[in-house]
Image (cartoon, rainbow, N blue to C red; front, side, top):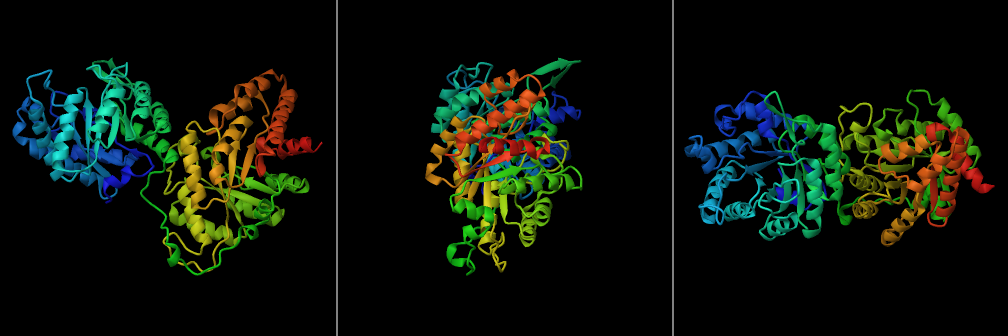
Length: 611
């Protein structure tokens, strides 16, 4: 098991579990009992809940010790068992987590007011927290989560207590009201700065409010700290139905906000009251898509230990690579694989592309998590039957590292040479939402792996004999919501070995220009995506349902004014031609999509320019 401190230095997202109390209550444990005492009297029940969260994709389990401090346990006559309850809580979570997941020791407020608002001194509060933290530490926790604090002074004492015992990472989370301030009136900007100064490693929000207020509060915290941020909202606000508090936020709604948390910079997500394993499972899909989370890495072998092989020069890797190296403007067309096993319709269209002088065919790999013919076999069929080069997309969603390596070695033996590496859309987006996503690595990790194969090594740094000669491409989104993050990932892709990049469809050339300006320091050949819209409905679909694509209002308005199918098609072609003309001086080529598999749409874009 790695030290959790390493996770703090990684640019990836980690997933906490959900609510323990909600789950215990759903299993018939009523609120007049001490949930924490169950660590001693019904440990299997507690562990069953931990395991449910593990199965749902949680990476950090929080111990069942939220109220296991001396003050709250005394109210139930359990104060003499404080050490045993906390120690056992850590052990139960550790058993469920195994060696692959982290365990966080949970510490909540004392439930009393401390100075200057109450009679309990800050030192007395610190000692109470220290007693609980010591037992959790003995139980083997990897980090501490201080959660649901309203009083900034009180959470300060909890931080002091932990720091006097150890240097394990601390996640310090406040709870806020609808206005984003704590119940004591402390603003997010203030409590974030204080928690940063006091040594919290991760600063966050949990409980009390739902995802929307949590997001609004997090957005106020981002500018005032460089520490990692966490967000664990309730599953909305509870509604009393037949005497029971029911949380109404659906798993899909929670997952949608988890994505937004991540996009504004949150690195630790999860849920509080009302959050169930179903919610965590939905959130896990977003986490995997935006920051693949498995602790699997590609071994990078030092230069002096690499096999003495001669890598294939880039211009010799493929005809497509040679044309780019020669400075020629290249054109490719993207064709979605068929749903069935008959490629004849696709081949008919590809023959038209070859006759028209198109340089290559792009083949997506399960776009929008749809199940279609594999990109690799279709690419091999196209090159064999038609004689035009293929650029097959390869995503990280569906295979583990071993399967990826096997696929790519086989694809190279089949004669394929051009690859576009992408992370992949999560299964939740497609018609099989319960399918398992793998995501051993993301597109950056896979680019590293393919580069190693080009240097004659497998993922473990072992020689493979003759090196591959993959022409490595990556995807990029100039219109990303978090452009800083997109550029940072682009830089890493270039460092990993990317040799060209293909953008998402460009509808606003000014957005592309700004992006190209910002990547001048690490520029590789960029191929701009062009999509000929076919109707207003098609434009709305692209704008709302295709990840990473944004159709600006002026384009939407042009499509809205185009009445009738034929006029809409002509307007869509005109928009695509205008975009192509504008980008030709900016990039090294274009990838034109063929909506609904109709290659003539793509050819009309090019032919319109030629005329």
